[in-house]
Length: 443
Image 1 (cartoon, rainbow, N blue to C red):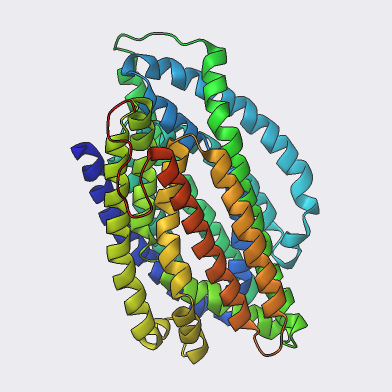
Image 2 (cartoon, rainbow, N blue to C red):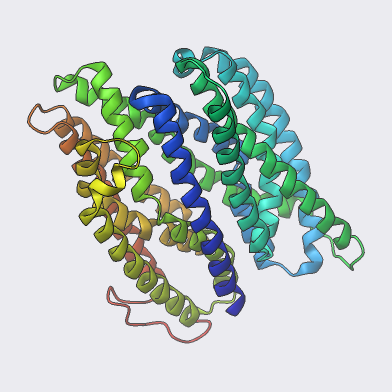
């Protein structure tokens, strides 16, 4: 298990630095774009992430899981088939995207170039996903960590340099901010694909065995399709969440301009700060998918119980410290972005959302590794329906407004974490309080 812990530590350290850079990026954007511009930037991000998700087809997850479960002699053949599938999928997606993107109304409020910048993302993300999945499955977390850090540092350097040296109007500044985000993904693509080619050349010199193309496709699709559906649902709901929240606020009597500004403070300030410790959860997610997949394929339930216990203790430890800092130092933290008491209040009220979000990510990795993607999908649907229902209901009330929105967000996060946890406990044979039931290998 030492290799997994080293991977988690390395990913966590580099992710910590990356999240620190992310905070600096958001500070630059907040000061350059203003509250309204930041609201527009945060409003378009879920749509961009939705397109990124479709382009990746969750290949990092399916490939990493398949690679982890198979011997090294099969890896070369698996990757051959994965690349051929990716080429076909990317070509189809480029055609569909080029035809549909001009008619998507979300982009109407932005510079016309934004649509075509997003088109560039499709092949970039698709082929990056193959390399990322291979390195994850092979527990080469150093390359994943470097790529994640590289994305953030390039984004920071370009934004700082461009906005420091030149002056732009609001529309151009927003275009540069979005363009820089996409440009950083291209840098990651160049790095990971280059490292992948080097690794692939080395694989050619080693003995290998073939796997039937249909078997590879079946195994990849068995994970990619339901996982993409799950992520797609989350990304789609994330894309409409900005409009849902703003619509609820407008219905409560807030002007459209104020609703956008409040949403910008919620997502651009409070959420940005609250998600900062999430680098640990994300590191756990990356490492746990192939690790749990391998251990589950060996039917080693006692090891699964032990890992779950360690993950829960670790998450609870850093999570409580993080939300305590957010709660008691909210004014000081949010003042780094705006001189506003409103964003500080948002940060304090969202502590349940953040704490349980830290649990959701590693628990979701467990469910993917345990082949419980369908159950995870159902949990996400239920938590989202309840969360959105509360957001619309309470957020539309004049006496609640943004407080009601936050209650809905908190409820969804708590509900999702609890459903994931209880389902995993039942699967691997532990009680709610971590007492093992299945302790023998192969039970």
